[in-house]
Image (tube, rainbow, N blue to C red; front, side, top):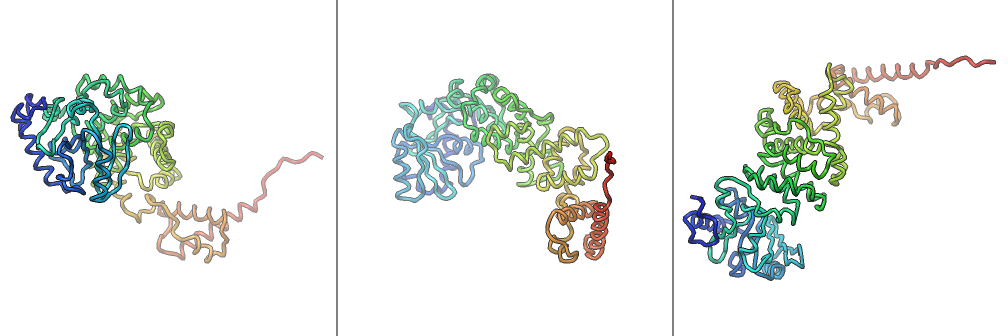
Length: 434
């Protein structure tokens, strides 16, 4: 498909790029199987937003989120479709006439035009890449804001500064889209993003967190994390992004040996923890306590490692692996990004972490509490807990024969005897004057 400067108007006769794009969209739309036939929609329905953009980029999924616009009656259309073809209707905004149809893997948003015409509605959208519309009845593409040209140049351009002010979350969405699509951001748009960043306090914290999580999962996020951190600090001064964020790339994760969903999850965790930095930021964003603990532990061990000069003591090593039983690769990525760990050593730790039988990376007591109680005539309580903690440590550092129950029980008896002896030793007291 040829995309050039002529494709900046809503007139389908403007040039070959627009016609080629329309043909490409016709083919892409025909391959989709939404929960209703396209012919069931009113003749003036248009497809807008991410589905149009992704189809032109050749990255349209089998079940994309579908955004449709109609002159009016959007919620009513959702209800009519659900009545005939099934699904659940959610009214997103009754006043602005916006509804959603959820049907299996499909989410279809329908909105009334924000303006008197389709072109006026498109000109109110956030970025030119999202301000293109495919007219389903006429099979034509409308591009009043120059989205095709920006798409050809992989450039993200905001249509107007006022559009960012209308919903400041679009500040973060810009970086997320650039990271997902591999785009640059137009310099004027970058200036607007920095200008509007303090207005993020108008946005619900859960929306901000969701946008940041999507950003950190994007393939090219490392190019934009530092700038995103600067924008966040304009709104949230307590944010303390880590040094080395720009090195947290997919290439680094693949060099470590991660792949698939594990790569995406661990890299996203390292990025998000590094972007937000302080635990107070997570609290401000309303993160779950589980997620806050996860970030706190990762931050703690990154700092401990950075401050250490002679390596970690046994107690520290054991606690590190207890804290990061599921997230050690994220720490390895953070250390690699700051050149605080060699790639060879990091690979060794990853191999050990992947081995569920590794007693240090996955610390555990070699015998169950029930078995220890039975064999040693112990009752449950603090003493049993202390014994299991001791055996877990001995096992982690190879001082037990893990599959030899008799030797483990002998070592347990020795510990119990020593513990009993230490309790019998009287403490020294100062003499009491008569």
